[in-house]
Length: 348
Ligand SMILES: O=C(O)c1ccc[n+]([C@@H]2O[C@H](COP(=O)([O-])O)[C@@H](O)[C@H]2O)c1
Ligand SMILES: Cc1cc2nc[nH]c2cc1C
Image (cartoon, rainbow, N blue to C red; front, side, top):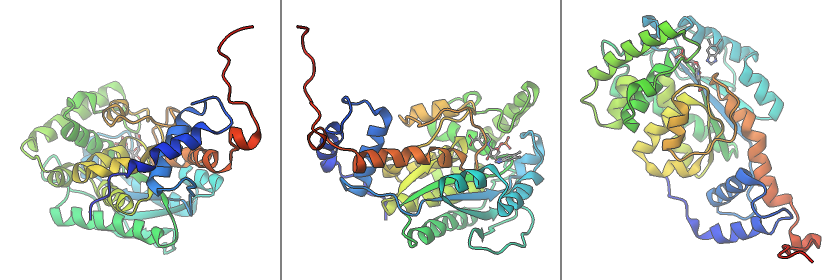
């Protein structure tokens, strides 16, 4: 079932309500656009955000063995242990803002002891193949990872969650994201490849050389699912499935940084209506993200120089999303507050 394109018939009424709030016309800027979008997603002049969740998917990448990341592949496993222990940035930020966090192993190398509602084991494979030599994932495994994303979103939806943010963890996944951007947006590869976790100039040149080879190997592919299988990753595929499921169910979707936006590129290639449900929480420091957002005609809420992933942009922007809704539901109108709407048109 594809997502529904937003029914815009409520737009004039929502805009009128926003314009009648006690503020100069348009003075709440992007929060006004956001309030309108959430009103349309929920088809309500009185929208509510319920049981917000951040879902973080983790997976390893075979290409990490080729020196494309500043950190070793083991960091993916170690960071998942850190998520489970509650010590990562996303743990701190979700606690701060009252968001529920669920972490899912879809493709990490290594096994985890933990078994809690906040940690879901859905390992499809222990890491992708090195895409330099063979497609990163088989078609079946790609579908399985997408199903994991769908299942997690369905799980939280049944717990009355109507807003979900996506995060990821996977050493090497900025390589996959750059390749997906290159193929799906037809942007030259050198404008898609960035420093990821912090490559030096020389390392960046090496990353571009490796990824140029990969892009050439799969240049014949045109189908978005085949492109995802060849150059994606398990956590990216899970985010694709999660985004599709959230949009199909009319949820508000919080998009994090470069890697999650690359997953969105795949999701919208499969179902163009998904973009209507997406809130772009921030512009990442990763070189290609600005261009990616421009191509999506997206106005990110924050620009803090973040390049962490984990869904941290979603958690940080959530209070702004709340503020947009609160503006619509809690602010007085000129009429109810007895404030004059008359604009000054001439000096006495
Ligand atoms: O979200 C972003 O914009 C972002 C930008 C750069 C790096 N990251 C994170 O860093 C990892 C990928 O970087 P790399 O260098 O290992 O490809 C992965 O775990 C991401 O969560 C995330
Ligand atoms: C330490 C570390 C934490 C991360 N979180 C997301 N990606 C990451 C990459 C590294 C290297």
